[in-house]
Length: 140
Image 1 (cartoon, one colour):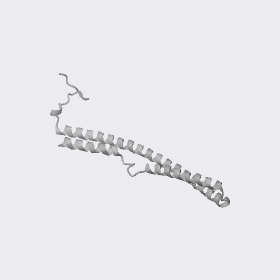
Image 2 (cartoon, helix red, strand yellow):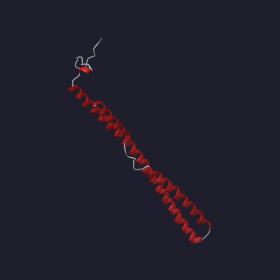
Image 3 (tube, one colour):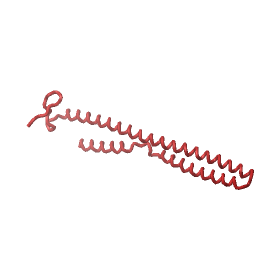
Image 4 (tube, one colour):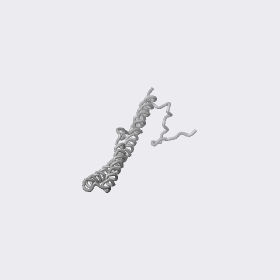
């Protein structure tokens, strides 16, 4: 049976022969490593959420511009309608109204991306809960 050596060249004691102090040191080391991993997970998750928010902001801006264009068309239609009281104003009014509806739909789609739970790092929280349960199990 061959023994494995650690960095100092000595044979480390078997797990059952390790002292409480060594076990505590291992716990601190592993807890520190786990904490760094959880921070990295939170960072990655928040970056993804911020990207999603950026997409929502762009959709809202595009929707706002389309609504504005529709508003201008409706104003043009109202002006043409009052001036002529003929078919060209009706066409412009229909185009303006449809444009406003499309712009409103796009803006609300962008707004939905800003939901209340959008920035919550859910995977990290689930992982932290599992870690706490595991540590509690090890302490018992």
